Length: 286
Image 1 (cartoon, rainbow, N blue to C red):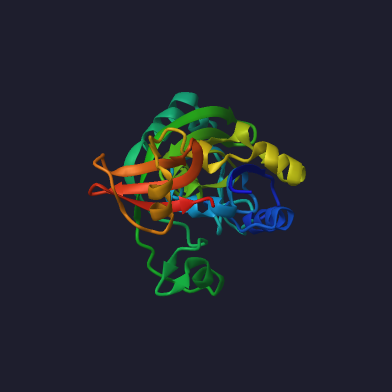
Image 2: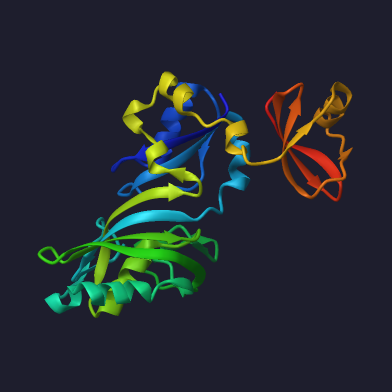
């Protein structure tokens, strides 16, 4: 069983929990393309069997989230799990629709973002959350991110909450974005809810829930490696060239550099890479 399975992660599950369950069912090596916090929900692509070899092609994808930002409360973790550090009254005029839209639009484009202290980024060999738990101060350098679009979905004036959708580059921390939006509005806030609805080409409507995971649902919903790379061009190899290819011999092909689907007698063999007119094996199913 080789390919990609899209899971709709529910609250309370860790990404590790889901990987372990899929591994137990399939008996295959299983990985994922990017962890989701236990409180977060949504799209978690699982890589199964030879699908794990596709990770290098899937790790840098942009992502889309639905977010609920709670205003008036600042937490040490930036999300619902943390301890309250600060509370403020939120004036209703901060929640006027046009004002909120204007503030959100300020975050469009490339920018620098300071990651949250409660994150797994390493500084001097230690993860930031290790410093945070010990109450140690550490310099956190800003990182370049890109917000491709950000759209207001709903304003809940009674509960002082803003719901929005955002599409962003890899490495964007939505907890930091929520705090920055709150600051721009003139108050404090934290990320109350987070749902990832898209990772690259993988969307929430393709996903199955953790509770549905069994051998049948995996077989019915798995995206094969051939399907994953369906938009690539094909290379057909005869028997002699196929054996050379499988043995790691680079084959001469005067075509443009790139990734190609490899076939023999119309049977999908795997993925090859052409560079400087030489084709070499990359992901082989056999």
